[in-house]
Length: 355
Image 1: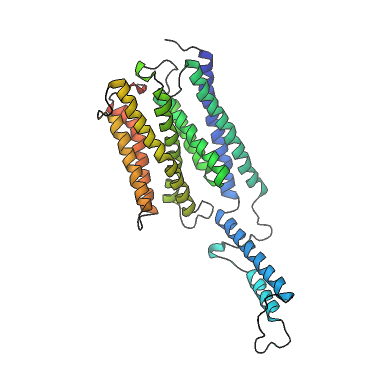
Image 2: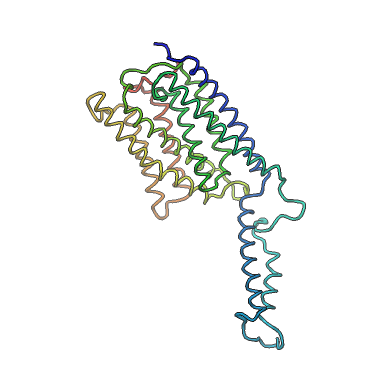
């Protein structure tokens, strides 16, 4: 049966390509900001040093007006030790510097170029534009066939990439994680490129089993959780490949915290998706569980992420080891998404993988 609006279907395909281009340009902007802007660790330390200097100056003022001065020390008669001590601390604090120059403000003439910061700002704007085009592509695809636009693998992957970028943008508004922009946008662009190259199918109706309101419940939850899991996986890869001397990359503590927060949010959503899938299976096939490969690997993925959360909460099993566990869990998620449909088949073989 042909699509109800072939023009919107074509527009959706074009919007996906526009989205890829916008994400690629945004990635370049993030990379310029990350590569030529102020190193993150130096910026943090500079802020800490500035706060410390403010406190020292306040102590010096109090000491000068006679507030909180220390008793005179031997050999310093006629002097105000509080003021002298504060002045000495101020003088010594000007030369504070941490390992590899961290905590030391950049010398005059060596400040990061202003265009680097502007590149980051433009990258954020391009990401929002790409997100708008991405959302429009999903909506026009659904309107063109008058159904929820995730009835096959192509539509699912496109929607999952949208969920990952959405998670990044809204977490950036709350936690200021712009330093992850280059990696999230390149992951989204690669995911969209893969779906267009290998998974794209012509817009059209779905099999009767998918004509159910459960697709709006079960699959939507799976897409949201998969998008958050993707962002956590980006953090996990960066955590493992990051060198201690890479001052411009986010710290391992930041990466670990962001990945953990994303998984804490997405794990209950994935749990709900698995339960909703069982309820849908009972309605469609008359049983809650039938050991179908898709069902089995969805449960394996759930167990793997539960193992990560348990490992993350267990003393002595954090950091690198826990991050490896969450990447193994993400591998299970990808196999559940692609591998099961390509290699194992089963009742979910209607995912329409192009031959």
